[in-house]
Length: 368
Image (cartoon, rainbow, N blue to C red; front, side, top):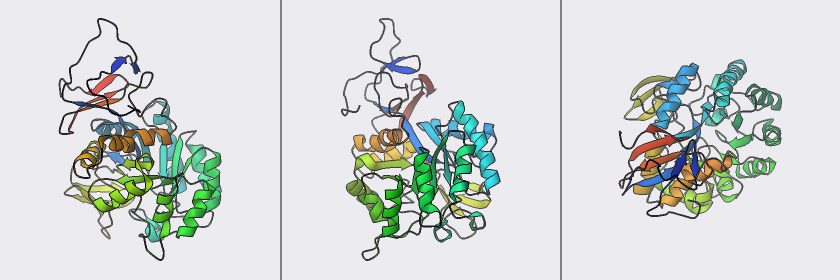
């Protein structure tokens, strides 16, 4: 709850919403010894269940969404990877139809406006400077469902693109960047409000050249994404982010690719081939980490058991903060009357046992 954790409480579901009172004949489910949490919200997700949000058919995308719902993500922003502009505008059209149906909460364009120096698992041949006119094409193609664009704001056109995004109510995220501290401060002043997977695909924190990490952590206007899978971040880096930014400015994301919830093997991430081994995705050529196979239930359990975060801080990072960033906290992100009945049931060991989305069980805690 926004006021903290309640013991011996009940959540009343009426249709698709959480209600304040229950009729006398309401069906009751006893969940003694369990946690009830708001559904998780993923701001940055490229696919799952063997399906890609960048290249799959609508049915493929729905399969990927369902995979993540099985792991507690009741609200998901579909992310693309770098491609040519014609492909990305077509992709925006397809994903916007799913957004209109309520299957995804919006579209996140990660690339092509990123730095070749910090490209990670993006095709260098398809990268381009962030021309505001081309950024506007993506916004228009998304038909009101563009949620976020990740840019290297130090590139030519970067600051003007940030201003354009802010004017249109689209989140400008700083990522895959080689910016200096001073350039990052300038981008935040222009309207950037998110750090795309902080620490990853950007210069490291230095004592003479603090780079983007220091600027992103210190500004209270910025929400920092973290991939809490044990591969992308050392626990000390995660602790640094929480201590410096505070629990109200962190959003756990998956940055998941097709293999999430599916298994090891060979996959395609855009035009690049990826090898997944022991749950870690890397480019076949070059070995760069290529997204993750993370699901948010694993990120939550790791946060409260290995990282020793208070449950309330982990819920803030997985539900409250991303819901607020999306402008949807009036509908999702906490267990309050009037909000969507998106809730999770976890046992005492923080293993996920039940998932409800808009009043319907995706995973029924009574049936498994």
